[in-house]
Length: 424
Ligand code: ATP
Ligand code: MG
Image (cartoon, rainbow, N blue to C red; front, top):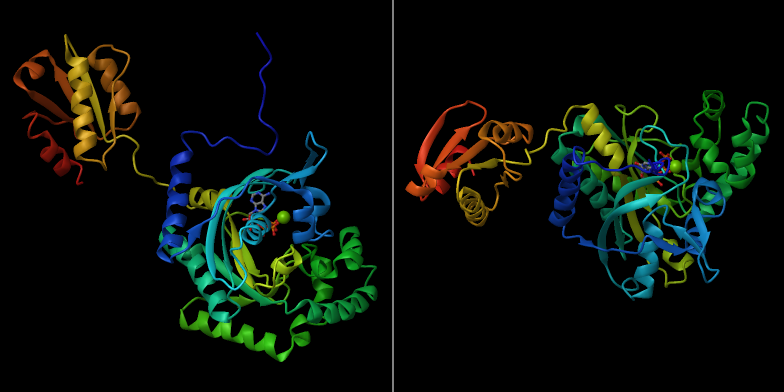
C-alpha cells in the first residue's frame, strides 16, 4: 500500500462534523456586519512580502519569525498573508477607495503564521475582520467596538468575554514614552528574561505585555504611557470611553495593552475569554491612522479588528453552546417498482415549496430497515415512506423518527402537514 500523506502541522481540516458550528459562527458574524451596513472586501491570500514587513513592522513577532515567505518562479518574494489589514489597505490604495472617502468593510478567510501549534494557535487559522477608513473621530472607535460586542450577544457568549481597552497615543508620544521606559528597564535588566532583553532594544513597549510574572511585578513601578499622552489623545480616549459607557458596554482600561503590530495608534482593544486558557484573546484591534500613508497612500485614518474564528468555535464548544440545526429534516425512504423516481420527484417538490427544510433522498437501495437506519444516522426528524401502494394511491407515509408515530397522507397535503410538523 502506498504511504499516506498527512496535512501540514498546524493546518487543520474542517470536517463535516465540525463545519455546522463554523457555519453558525460565520453566519452570525456576517449578519452582524450586514446589519451595520458594512461591505465585504476579498483580497488575495498571497501578497508581496514587503507589504507585510512595511505594514506590520520589521521588529514584530509576526515579521521576525512567523511569516510563510517564499520566492515564486520569477524570484519575487511573496508571503502568505499573516493578517488581513495590510491587504485591505493595499487594495484600497490601489483601487482609489480610501482618500477622502469613507469605507466600512469586512473580510474573512485563512491567515498563516508559523507559530508553535497548540490549542487555539495554529499555522493556518481563520480571521473575520472589520476595517473602517476615512473616519478619525471617537464615534468610529465606539461603533466598531459596539459591533464586536453584538457578536457576543448574538452568539450567547456575552457573559464569557471581557473587554480591555487602552490608548497608546501617537507615534511621537510613544517615542517619548519609549525613552522613559527603556531607562526604567535598564535599571532592572537582572529581572528581564532573554525575550524581554531583546525587546527592550527593538520594541520596548512589547515588554509591557510579557507573560513573565517577575517582569510583570517590576512593571508595576514602570512609567505609565497614559502620562505621556497629549491633550488631544486623552480627549479622544475619554470620548470613546464615554460612548461605550452610554452604550452599556463594560470594559477595563489596561494600561499595559499595547498590541503586537506596529501600526496601531490611540485606541487599542481586546476581547478576552477565560474559557480557553492561555490563548484567550478572541478579537483584537484598534486605530491605525498612519498605516495608509506608510503604505504609500494619502493620509487616511483607519480603525479595525481581527477575530480568531477557531478560538470562537473552541469557545462555543467549551461552553457547550455549539448546538446547531440538524442537517437533515426529512429523509425519503422508498421500496418497490417505480418508487425511486417517485421519491426523487416528491423530494424535489418539497425543496421547491418549503425552501427552508432539508430533504435527503435515500440512495443505494436496500430494504426499509436499512433505510430507516440511515435516516436515524443522519439525524432526520421525519421519514417519508413511499412503497408501490403509496405511489399507486398518490399517498405517502409520514413517520416521526423521534416519537415513532406514523400516519398516511395524500401527496397533495404533505406540504402543509410537513410545515406543521417541522414548524416552518
Ligand atoms: P496572540 O497574542 O494570541 O498571539 P496576536 O496579537 O498575534 O494574538 P492578532 O494579530 O491581533 O493576534 O490577530 C487577531 C486574532 O486572531 C487574535 O486575537 C486571535 O484570536 C487570532 N489569532 C492570531 N494568531 C492566531 C493563531 N496562530 N491561531 C489561531 N488564531 C490566531
Ligand atoms: Mg501572535
